Image (cartoon, rainbow, N blue to C red):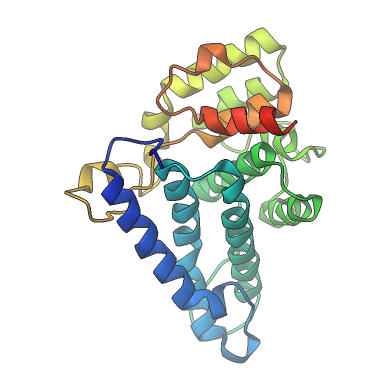
Length: 253
């Protein structure tokens, strides 16, 4: 298996996946199934597993796993997000836990990520509907999420103009202008995601041990290319563009 991300060694990806799989399985009985009998433990384990499931999806893609294998990881993240919302709704659950909303820029970005992978992988309609319910609970779809999920937006403007305004243009403009907006977005992508705590994770990698780096990928660019059927030739030179997601979708269509 050839890694898609060779910024680190194949041994690093093997360790990353092993660490994340072990952690997720340890907490799965609470994070993937709502446990009203012990909401305190459920809150702790679900909070821990939320980003671990996201990281595992990213690490497997980076390590070279087939795109079709990402569907199970996607479903896993959706399950944890759903249960996080359920635990957050429990009064006096043991620890403070708020439902993630799109006022939180990171939560919005994670929704873009999941919706884009779902669009590219071509998941079952039931999973897309679960994603739509998560988006609704977080505040509703803007033009970007609406395009990715194939639904009507509940607002006219993007949730966060900075750094996502180019995505809004890519979601609604004519093809030439939209692709140019995606190109601008990709050029500034690494700088623009600096608001997320794991953004500088690659700098912490030393040797082959997992250090929270799971790959740098602008999933949302691929999602919009697939959703709108763009020619992405001009985007493929970006090291952050997950072209295999687009290619897999075309092969499956």
